[in-house]
Image (cartoon, rainbow, N blue to C red; front, top):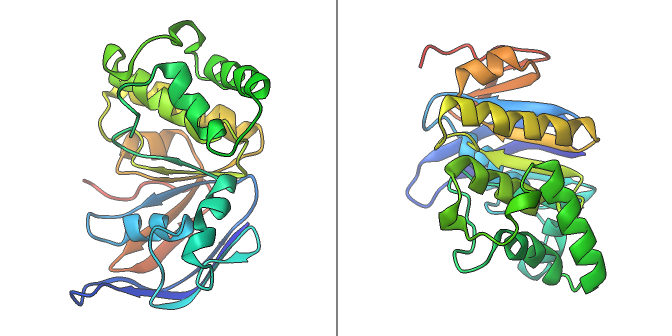
Length: 228
């Protein structure tokens, strides 16, 4: 599914974000990526959807070597991925239905297929009854669930979530996690960067801990392991 081999990333200002990362993530896994601020988690996550390119080493996702992928081919590659952000990134003038449908429209799916699939994923995330509402009429948790629906509407093999509960209260965070759990149970690989100790310790999955750009711990059913 995803393989990194001796990956380094040095930014133009000289900051070394990743310092020799090697790891594999299999189809269907649920993986937490943890570590202190500035450890390299976000760079690690961004490498997987080609937001960042390695300075050295190789990254392969679905058999595609991202180090050699032309910029013009990145949008096509990303059709196999779903990405969920901390700040939702919804289009403010579009309804819930339209925000999710947009992800299918850009790849020119048939309108009838779009309508059927959008209603399916909105039902999965519990928002079928709010299809005509705009983002600013929703709670933060509801907006994040719309974001998740949009990320899975094209049936990606992997969902990458970068601090998806970071702006949410504890109760809403658990709702979001239950949604991601359900998606994972249906066979989608989920990779989630997080600072949420309670979620990691209670909803047990594989934990990859990064410090100073290196993987310092990789445990099945691991724990958060930090006090902050």
